[in-house]
Length: 189
Figure 1 (tube, rainbow, N blue to C red):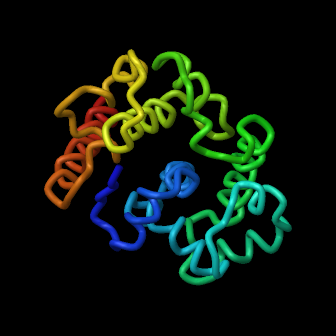
Figure 2 (figure 1 turned 180 degrees about the vertical axis):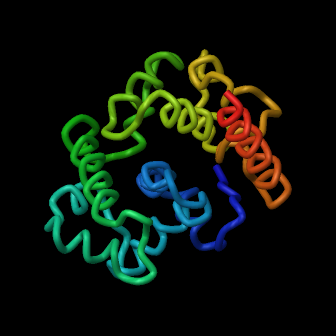
């Protein structure tokens, strides 16, 4: 499948071809612009000088990984916390899925099983899990029966609620408008 976020072509190419990069982008997609979150896996590979694996990141010296995340421009607003979170997710992949991020969704029976697997990852609460399931279904071709229901409102066809719906600048604008509406509604309560 081809991911086509409004980011560098090389970053999209990596997200499209490397399930671990896509998962790391989702891990980083909090408290920073999504363009930054989903470009950072590509920048991480550049900084390492090679394509990384879950095993490599799981076993990486934590302080050295933090230094790589913190190198200007930092890969995330909170480089120490997010380097640790990426490492935790990679350890979970090594422990449960033979170090292959694609095994997270390989052979799932249905959307319920998929959401359960995603939600078992460190840092993946209900909303992040639903968004990732929607991203997998809408842009990565991972469509077990019931995936839209498992993704909640993020799985709805024609919605513009998350990164799962972004394919260009126009759709990015629609998602940003939706998020702005939700923030305003939350403040009004």
